[in-house]
Length: 383
Ligand code: SF4
Image (tube, rainbow, N blue to C red; front, side):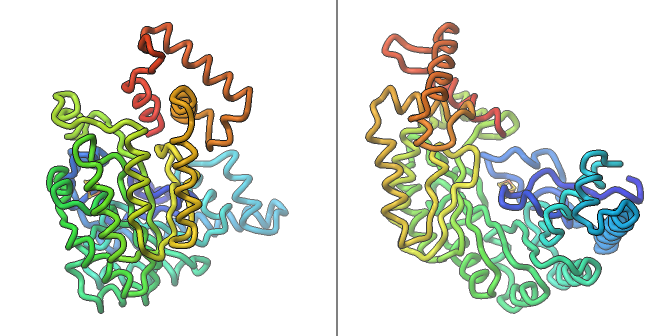
């Protein structure tokens, strides 16, 4: 690594697309969830505070150079220079810093999977140094595990909030204990509730992620109902849904192949999501900001928008079987974004052509039903 490069982890939440990514730990401290392949085979490590501070200084040095270049080139501001650098970056790090500046240079996401596991004084030190060194920062967020949050003292979470940690993204996935155990999530519904409530009490904003489809054909009802129960207890600021995808490298991949885990279809997952929303009784923003979600337009503020959100599901379920399939395929190949797109004749025609192509390959049954595996595989191309 050169002095001008930053260590980068593999992922961030979709809502952090314009944040600066700063890696404070490596990989996942649990790393056993069956539906997750991101860090498999990689060892968890805490990064030394001194190394993290060096990365922060590197960002500052690149930012200062960009601003100087901006003035010389007559841009008169960091955003103009950032745009120029984006067209011709010196390195991936320069590109990332320029992109962050282009988006205002205000938001930072701390990687990787469970930043909360850092000793609290170390994390407080990192956050304070970050804010002192880069004073344009007004928002700092990260991933954490419920179990780790539950083990922290409330006073520690409050210290992190006071230092400048604004939001935690937690992978709740489900609130149904047998399913959490089956997926080896390493937490119980009670851990989720304890950790989530403590984060809320600390004043740190909380995003809880639910994994639609995780119950498969066997447990989807309980998954929906128990997840709603746990979310009602936590009352998080945000509930974010994403849909189960299966990739090689996940332990669940082999269980799907061997028939031990039977995946739910999109239509079953829609029924699951309906049951989840019907059972929610909390004051959270419900967000579907993930490409894997069939009905990405289900968004709103609970409880006020509940009926509006359920109406999207009712509209999908009221379509004919042929139109539901057309929408599923169109959504999974990236042509449709919302149900209204079904009324766009050119998009509709493109999807009909895609169905014909799939049929040529022998993947459509006599009754016109496209092979589920094909639809899953289209969805998984995005991941
Ligand atoms: S805790 Fe999160 S990152 Fe770690 S294995 Fe589970 S899903 Fe993956």
